[in-house]
Length: 305
Image (tube, rainbow, N blue to C red; front, top):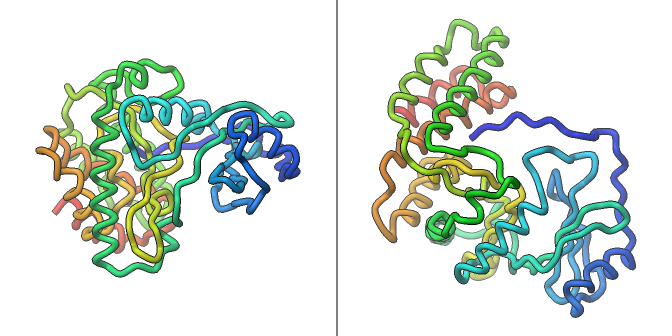
């Protein structure tokens, strides 16, 4: 699903905390935590302090606070997964504040992000298939806690899916119509009607990761093996197919979908919602100037053709 973000305090200071402050907080939950190895600034909304002992202290960067991101939500999701099985995700060890900045103490997933790994195409397909299997297992976790928590935004009932999709189409249509390159070239209302006609209205929403893309999918770079999935801070509730939307390349999408379907038939309406999610992603990219009209037309033909 496509979200419109509003940052809550864009002018707030964004300090890098001292090692002694980070270690003191980490050792409340993980006494084995050792010295600070690295401060990872690659996350746009979060900063990660990587400590000896396989411990990560993740903080929400003050100037990037937004309603849909929550470390408390991430702790809840990871704790629920730990209660229901053995998942290749971090373990949440503790949550709190240090010097007024919210943190989440986690175990560290081995390896590096797939987007930074130099692995061959066959290894990449295997990683994506494993990711698909993991997403299917996460989606099948009992929803009695995640489905009622106020920490997770999104759909509250099956009917909410079509309402949110319709609103996303309407917002993106307005943005594209304001760009003279797309004006009178793209009939977004017609595309929206085609997609909405096929959207199921009786599938109960579940907790989704939100962005299980290459920056959050981890691999062991030498062997090319899948090691896990990180960053559940943007989780929300909706149809499971929307968790596959980060993979827009056809061959990669097929690999993730193959893994997802390897343990059983796809839920009814899955492919229709998946394609609609991809359409919204491409419209959003175009609205931000990342696709030309011709590139957008080609992408929509590929998805809907």
